[in-house]
Length: 310
Ligand SMILES: Cc1cc2nc3c(=O)[nH]c(=O)nc-3n(C[C@H](O)[C@H](O)[C@H](O)COP(=O)(O)OP(=O)(O)OC[C@H]3O[C@@H](n4cnc5c(N)ncnc54)[C@H](O)[C@@H]3O)c2cc1C
Image 1 (cartoon, helix red, strand yellow):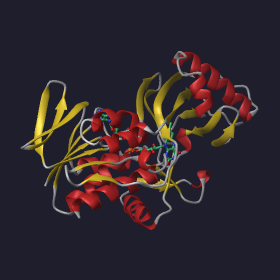
Image 2 (cartoon, rainbow, N blue to C red):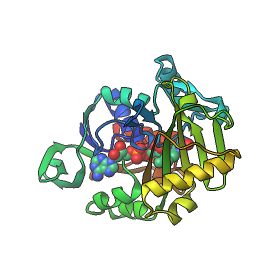
Image 3 (cartoon, rainbow, N blue to C red):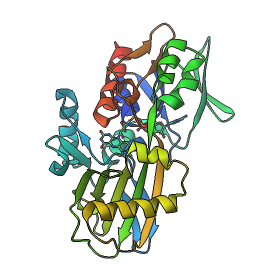
């Protein structure tokens, strides 16, 4: 089979890995310029040169036997490292969060900067529409993007699948990124759940990072929703104050700051679900079909790949 996958985040890539292992040909389409999805790393030009910030997921867990064996392989390749600061099962990509996805993606045919606007089907098979151009035909199609973005692509073909996506609500999240001139010795490397902060991380203290005092502060869902339409510069100011309060310290002026708003950062959880319509060969996967975490997204993609191959 030739299978088109919309979305090359961890779910889409896990699905692609399974399909390729079963001998199928896979093409992935992603609107981003490079690998990561919500495990992205932002590279920014600052007064200290190019600096990287893990502005999506700060870390991920590997608890299930299956995912643990994949993570162990990544570890052996130097793509991830344990990060006990966040818990016994916590891992981070090295030297950046998106490192394992970059490696995974390099083994596949991925079309970057390709926002899919529609999927259509005729007697020849599935067609992937990118602006006014259509690509295909493919024997099967997989939608591996957040629920709110998946629903319109699914609704033309399988209303139950689209309704499942429509019933999900993803929460927004602001991530603020800071570079400081000097180490702030009064702050611990990791702060969890204080005031509006879900996580505040000294990014530069994660394994394998470049030197430089870099921080990423993630606001919780409620705060992010309240401040959804704020100017990013103001969000940086507010979360810098929150970081100072959380650490009980006066914060210096950053050399560089920026904020990213994730409109669909994490969905509300549900029992894991498989979405595969074998009659028309359409499937969906992603964290929205389980829980809003990397490990669940991987499991969703992997389970779908196995179902299609089967
Ligand atoms: C701020 C933040 C903090 C988080 N913290 C944690 C954490 O601590 N631990 C944890 O385990 N998880 C965390 N998560 C959640 C975790 O990142 C996600 O659960 C996981 O990455 C989801 O993977 P996915 O493949 O389902 O979706 P995504 O990673 O979103 O991948 C979907 C891909 O589809 C692409 N795409 C979307 N629409 C289209 C389109 N129309 N056409 C083409 N391509 C498209 C996107 O560019 C993206 O690359 C966090 C997420 C955020 C945003």
